[in-house]
Image (cartoon, rainbow, N blue to C red):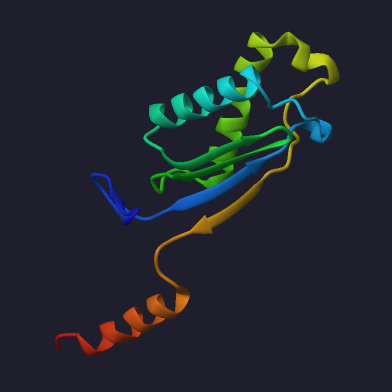
Length: 133
């Protein structure tokens, strides 16, 4: 399975694993709240041409594995996903507002691709032998 994508100006394989945790690690992401959060993440990503490769909502945290074009930084992706989802969830489920904000200010992000650093190094080194004088 290749995750490489293209835009008018680039070819890219930028995949991010993001993890978000509710404030105080409360177990509030279950039942209809979890279902709604999944719908919101899918809608937010579709609007911005981000492709979700994996999504798992646990009671006290959420995992999103997605691909995004290079114009989006990982911190912008996290900010948009957390901000928009919190806004809609707090409107739909006012009881979530009991302790203030929905999400902590922190998040985890890891990048993933289909090639290793060793392969990239060999590819770059091989380019020198292909130079035309």
